Image (cartoon, rainbow, N blue to C red; front, top):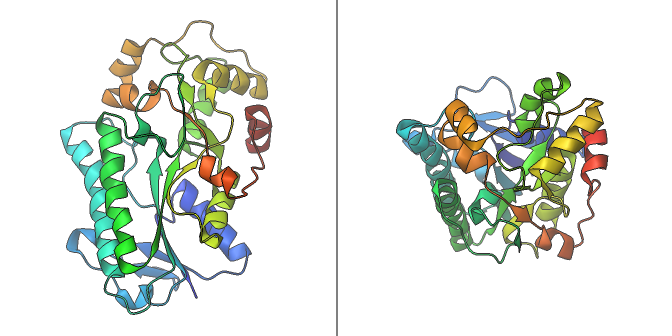
Length: 297
């Protein structure tokens, strides 16, 4: 039986698809265009069009599709697209699950640690309530649609992912050229916590959750050792053998360059622990940032 993956061309989706196939699993990639390969199935969430036969009898659905949070400068139209691409797509898939005679065992959807809002120095786990702000509201709407999968008898997991570390993409991939020029610097005060996870650990954690029927609901996909942005900056510079700038980039300068995303995505503090993963027996390959950066770079 196959595992369905949406967003399979992204950083996390492509890594997960590769790992599943290496383990001998069949993967069907849902794409929002005409299929170009035998393992692709077209779906059109804006038209509520899903091939039920492709979903029938599958083991799991891993839903990662959505417009990039940092893909463009935010305006009202793009913020609506961020919401639409996540909430609408999730709603369409969950509604389809309810029409199946043999639904999958588990529906895992992406979410983010932005759910918690800015928590400062406070250590939080999955029991912490929702924060405030656009991204917190987006995560709540997104997860709310995903939770409805339980009505179809499907275990629902919401993967609240932190900063995913890979030299091939994501935020780390974008800042590496700057750091290699010796121009890396803390952002804002630098005191905000960044919760991170290597892509390898993210993939293994997903496989762990898919195989563990006792894990459900929100799950933090983050390392057990979050660090401040200033510490992240120092350690990344050290890993690259480059000095970093002593003065931080002020928040107003980030806002000028990046707009609203800077204040919502870079400056809030997320000191998040992966309580459900560790309690269910998952063992991280990379717990400390030094080791993680050595493995990634």
